[in-house]
Length: 151
Image (cartoon, rainbow, N blue to C red):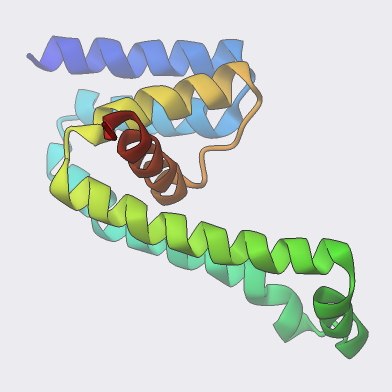
């Protein structure tokens, strides 16, 4: 059983290297190293609290321009008066909504995680995507599942 998981991580590392995706490569190599060093006790901390820490760091980096003074009052006015700003606001609303739907999907159908991981690896490796939106991806999956399951 452990060999299968190691091979999966090795395959993800390979795909990350081939697709020139640093995030996938480093993540899969780190997890493979943790498994090979028999530090599996760390895995639950990376999965639960690690996800929350990662999201916190992501939001921290997004909010940093406010703290550094790089965002001005004219930037804020532009966000509500220009088409790009309005689109960004709507995108933020949609992202938050999809994130909530994604969280519900992952809680009610944990088997969806496998598909999200595979899809994220494919998107990151072959389409030069960045795997930063698993909750939004899960939200999209929830909407697609709803559409496919309608009579």
